[in-house]
Image (cartoon, rainbow, N blue to C red; front, side, top):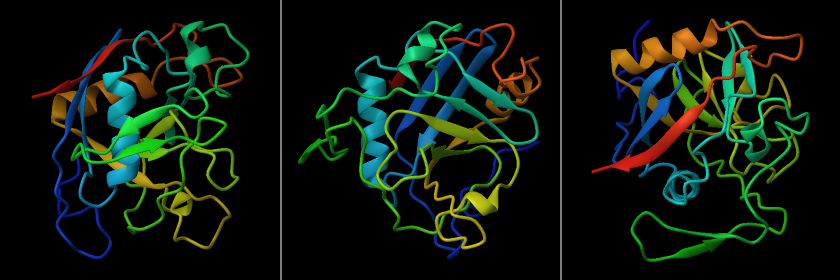
Length: 206
């Protein structure tokens, strides 16, 4: 398995400019993420803001399906046994700043953000995509890491109602190996890892 090259990600063939790098230290190893700042500035800023706030520290991967994806980012997952894991998000009407520092955004009354359906970036392996409930504007802090090409989850793919915008990718072969290892962890009937996979810390590099 290999991380995608930066020219393979946009279906339009445009080169993506990736700027912000984030390090996730987990109980199964460290991986790094880069966000698509130029093409997904709003969603990327929401994600980076949560990282800077320490929102993801101490949370666990609450849904792992080998051959599909890994889901993360629910505050309730701090308790690996919580039945509410997968249902939470940021605080209602909380704020985050645009990556250029010029604009302050306010999340919606339920803590979610608006859907950024602007770029046709497909849900290819090792990309990060916004999780949601299936309803418009229902993404918040939860995201998933694709481990295969889940093109039917693309917001511009009309074969299913699913609409999940991609906003970043795993970088480096060592990070890919960590993601692959997490994807192979044993899970219960609800796809929750039997041994919790915890994010010890997430921080912006540079």
